[in-house]
Length: 110
Length: 106
Length: 117
Picture 1: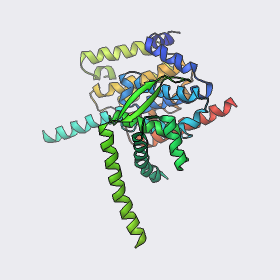
Picture 2: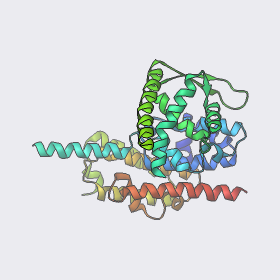
Picture 3: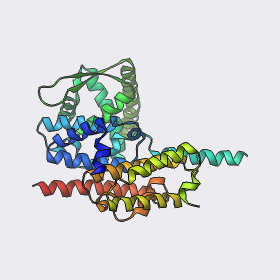
Picture 4: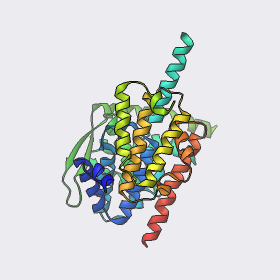
């Protein structure tokens, strides 16, 4: 019960989830899997609010409203679609590795 | 096939820029035009990832207009930086294709 | 010395405490996974902790969102939490993991969409 509260207590997130739920079933499935993948890969935009997820949702809503099958709009390789979406984004991993490299080069100088 | 995808990425971006430069348009319309050209594998998602990149790099102007069905739709036009980008794309394309043709003919 | 003692700076400890509070609200199997993630990240960490925070936060968000959705923890992380953490911090095999996540995404989509028909 309380887990729902903490997430859905955030007004913005609640509105977001409501939009997801309004999608047709097949769109919901694809959206949720995409979201899970993005959380794992960790593009930095995710930490900056729901902008990226909200954008993706708008894109899917448009396809759903036009009555298309979800894979018709994302393509069958949904992972490739996700990768293309965050291609220019740094991930948490990139930032972490940069900080490690900086530390290494700093240590070398000292 | 991986390499083919890499190669196509730049080409498709050029195509999308060119299509937008002909006049204000939106994602689905761009997809249709690409498919008419014979890029059968292109889906709206493909175009969306490209327009998103153009948007991020400030190469397009965007106007959201209400749609008869569904959420408001994003309409794109090229801005000055986009025009410049397109010009450079065609120049690069000229270089590559002329060299390749030469190679093929000899 | 445990992970929490290793991370220095009071603001960070506060951040970590806030994460812990949020984690307490997770279902039991998710809490177990959360603890395992933290422990694994610690093993992997030769870091000060500060640059670890984004990983911890995104993992927590992943758990919160999928728990609210009622998914099973296996479905979210697979059965290999250690591997998941290695992939997060980019250890050896991280690339293979991203490939695995890609496959999982496409397979899940195919399976679940197939289930609709």
